[in-house]
Image (tube, rainbow, N blue to C red):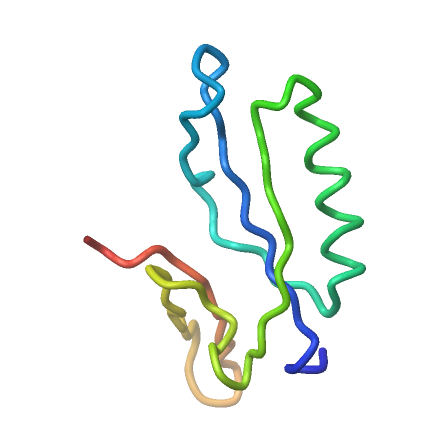
Length: 97
């Protein structure tokens, strides 16, 4: 992934009663290698909500500046095992408020 051309998808869930009341979807933002890949995935995600209850957009981000994480999220590293058998996983989680 070229850090200067990465893209992030942000989704909002809107009330079926009041379409103007929307809240962020309870999931970490998804990073993509390019805006085109993000837009293709966004099209598929929005197709699963044909009544418009989910809205979203893709935006270019420079991960060398932003580290690829929107405000309110952080990266947590979890290491399992010891020595050469250790495996580290990285998770994006919402910060406590």
